[in-house]
Length: 185
Image 1 (cartoon, rainbow, N blue to C red):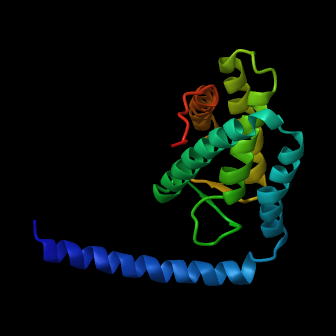
Image 2 (cartoon, helix red, strand yellow; image 1 turned 90 degrees about the horizontal axis):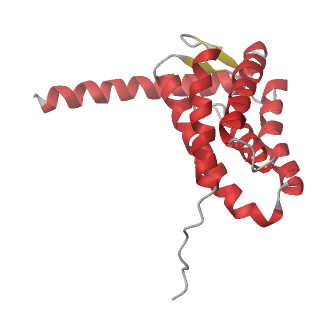
Image 3 (cartoon, rainbow, N blue to C red; image 1 turned 90 degrees about the vertical axis):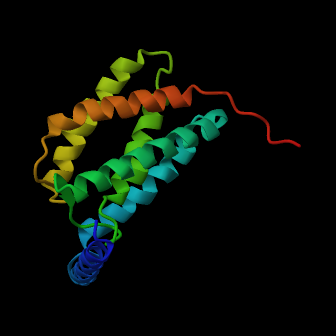
């Protein structure tokens, strides 16, 4: 393999990406920043956390935040992957350089999961996973598509259902863990 040729191509590609990102930021600054949909995104990033703070099961806060962090990481990774592969994209981003919709990944997905975990904790997790998947895939995604925030390219809402089920079931499993060693010396 010719490393010099490869390095040259990667550097050229990186420079082109930097120019496009700079252009994207300029467009975002002119058309998105402080628009109604930008404010909606900011509100959806903050207000649900404030509400959750008051309605959460207080003695499970650490466990729920641990689970929420897992959901955030998975959501962010899958969103970046989907965006980079061109199967979907987002407009009206809260933060222009992130290829994900921050309110969805850091607030709506994790909070929905941990709230459902708190409701009837003894209920069948598969049924709860299915309810979560149907709500997020057939109500939330179409709503954000209708707002023109979520841009489906090569994706269908139904494709999200099994992914959402797996995310919920993994979060359910993580929420039940209690094997934490003490950090005392």
